[in-house]
Length: 224
Image (cartoon, rainbow, N blue to C red; front, side, top):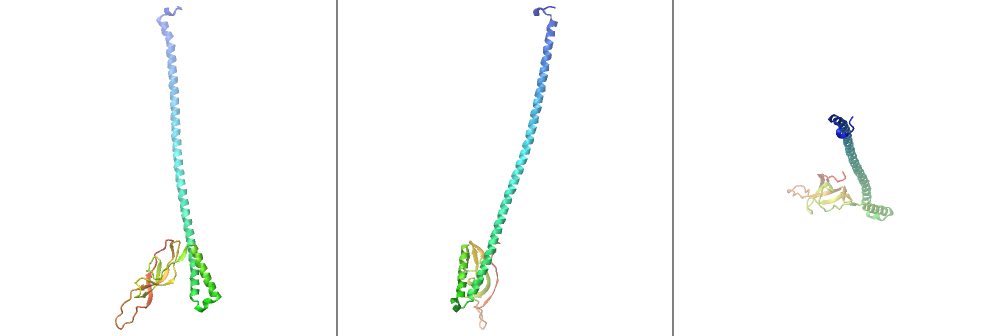
């Protein structure tokens, strides 16, 4: 065997090169396997990220929907409670003005000489106190006599021909109307003037007669 590398034969030099080529191929194959494994892992992670993102978006959408439904529920309950409270206050106010109507009738039936008695003065005091309490809650009577008839605030019970005032004028307040906090609580029941009709000679004069009014109802109040 020739130990001098420079004097080695071509066959020997080829043999010494063959193992090195095989080793490089193995290393490339291992690198390819490693890169393939890493790519598969990356694809798996990407798929997991997409899945988790979709789940997150779904949960977020459901959460927003639930929050919107809860907000709508709160608003609806608040509105219903406010309506129920307002209706309860209106019902109570109407009952109170009905009591005031009875006090008005009692005072109207009291003769002048009886007004000096202790009982009549006591009723008048209660009447005044009642009006004062109502006014503190902004429940006040409406002025109607001498004003034009307004179907929003007046309910015509009777009509009477009159030449002294224009037609459609409130001649008399039969039952007082009330407002509460600037809104209609109860319409006034009134007598309304109509135009005087010239009667033919010899016929009965109806210019000062009263008659039931045609249906003239107030417009619905805001509370209804």
